Length: 542
Image 1 (tube, rainbow, N blue to C red):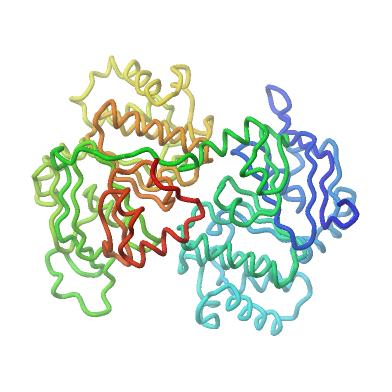
Image 2 (tube, rainbow, N blue to C red):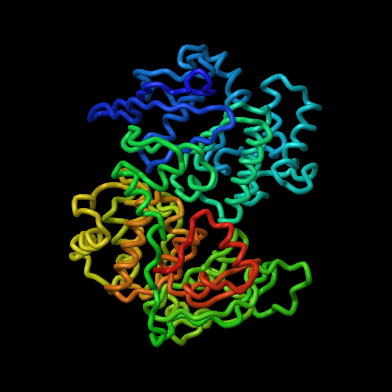
């Protein structure tokens, strides 16, 4: 295989010196990829998969990192022994990369056409040829009206479109090898399917090799030829995708696969519908540019972010809300929390009109409904200790717990969500992503709410950490009688966790009902498309 390999990594070791010793992020890693092949590198955060792949493009800062041993052979040539000038001639032209977060990777002050053209210009392509190539690339990756949209800025595109723009930039010079770092982790299921189909189409047309770094087992099952599994900086298993997914040998690989929602079927999530109604949403619409109560003034071109939504949430239920970006899920969540007002319609919490309350009444209701955000890093104040973060709701609602009991109260909440008492004086940056999300859940529990709204609360987490958080939410639902609004784009996850489901499309609820009934027998064409586009294999309920 070595003679024909497009790229081969041999015995690579990458170390990070620290005050407490040397951390070996990549430890004796070896893998190779051939032209036209897709290699998936699978593992949890911190396993070393991104660091090892970034070293191929010289994107690992040295220092602080030290590449202590190994070779990175591109067509037999060791890239670690080439000059920076030679590496720059290869990077982008022969080897290219798609980054996980396109909004962070794209410059917000330049039009996207200019940014794609920059890739071409630095490799000697003249301005006119570069512009024509940009228009062709945008059309190729499925951006409508490419001539006009090339003049627009990153914020004027959806997440899926921005990822397509990143792909256009990465393939601009027809590279022989494309490294894609979590290219679909934050995308809706239908957009995810479109992006992966596009990458496979481009691969079949050009014969390029593709290294796919991911924690999404559904993606691996769908597109990979071979798989490398990493844990703690080492490769613990490697083989064909079929062998790894169907007959894993290493305990860690089996653990990852077992954490995949629905891998062994689904438990029944049926719930007694006789619980009291906590949320009653009746004919709610949110029309941008129109004041509340004046829906009649909305013109035909008015943007209806949410259009005539109606549903109920009873105590102990988990209502899953699914749909593509722009379907109105998050706008609906904001209205449920009182952060936005409906243009028309009524939202009742425990029988009272949520938007007809006095400020004092609203203040009291908000302690009964809490929010867990998608990104725990952004939602936790980096300057505050965990004790301060979790106890902050008690400072706002001073009648809940006396200040002398705050520290013990924080410790109790941390232990409830699976963290230790000695974590209390640390800061958010000292925790992993899954631990930070547990801290966010502990904060949400501080006021003993009856409803928790989770907006993509686990979408950015590794599959095993995701499973741990979902198990925690299930346990809290059972022990405390909590109800959840669970917004997600992972259909298998919703099937595993939700008792009921609402499907939204372009602001409207097109289907709703008990989760098992909707998944087993979808009625609306859009629901059928969502389920068929899902990367995960959704077996029937066990």
